[in-house]
Image 1 (cartoon, helix red, strand yellow):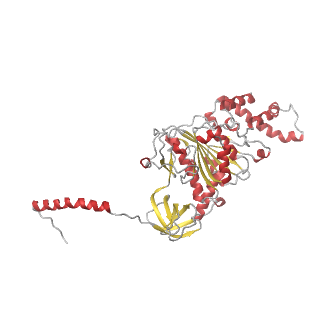
Image 2 (cartoon, rainbow, N blue to C red):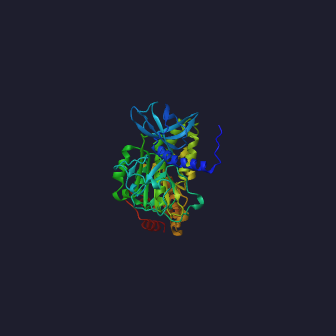
Image 3 (cartoon, rainbow, N blue to C red):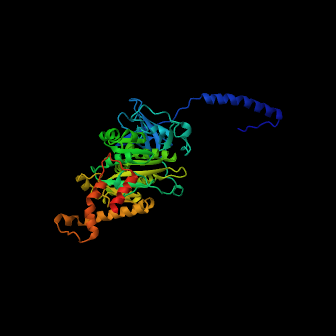
Length: 475
């Protein structure tokens, strides 16, 4: 049907007047309209994954599962699609869910509330405070984009940071120029760590990784420490926080905890959330020490998720997605941009034997800027920290250590290597003093070097004092 507007000016004026009267009433009706979100439904639960019929969701989007009968409500992340269904990985236990459960899409990716209020606190990978009453509400005005470096440090508000963030562009990063004292002589003297460096702590179970981490937290000169406990034993969490760390260390530490009994997506998320928290403080211009224990358990959680989603197993059963996830996680640490902050990251890696057949150890060693190797043989001799100095290497020590420091460290390494070469000969009585002057010096100084490298958890060493003792040993 064709509608013609009269060419008569008076008729057109009457039509516009009527339209002007209709628009306000139409606006009132729209304002009073009750909108209802279109939710999806759980189609099936297969193993650790949930298949749901819901449109418009994307990979990485946060959803909520709500069962109308049991009243249970848990979070889930979209990790893939199968035909017309979305595949979700729950962040929580599946008990109480059924095919009656609704799937509520949030339309946004996962985030975590960050701010100075987190200092001294323990949170879950979902941002829940585990040691205090509920946290203050997130400042919605700050959630659209990260705060600038000039944002207030003490206003008490929380800002939302993305869990899956992009690393800083490589050409905007600050250069690494300064060392970071960790309070451990075997590291500060012979494997110096730089501000903004990423380093791996490799070792078998039971060689003292947790004790070494607690010593680093207490002895570090970083302004903020973020501790990510991924798949940790529940017994050790409180022991680490309440026994091994003192009150001063706790005040500047944020701990993200996901114990070994939690679902795989939550364990994997713990490392991501800890990194996001560290990124926030870096963007405030602070020097942050990020400790993730352990990268191996993060990889195992990713393997569990990938295999459940139908990915093909590759090396040691790890899916291809893991070898893409590792560099994405590790590259987020390091120096920042114009804010001047940095994230110095230490990732523990569980190894079997020398770790040459472990794909996680191989991949992380290739990506990181150095490696500290813990020796089971030293641990059996009650030598702690059980750091194998000759097997360890900081790739950035040459950049941040002074010329004298590098010379003294090289001299001690040479003496340790010479002693290791003749140790068997000494045990069987085949070496004769005077055969080689440098080897004789290595034998004479062996006990003093071991005494220098041995250090209890509560024996924190000042960086200047460490270099002074190193110089005395070398010269």
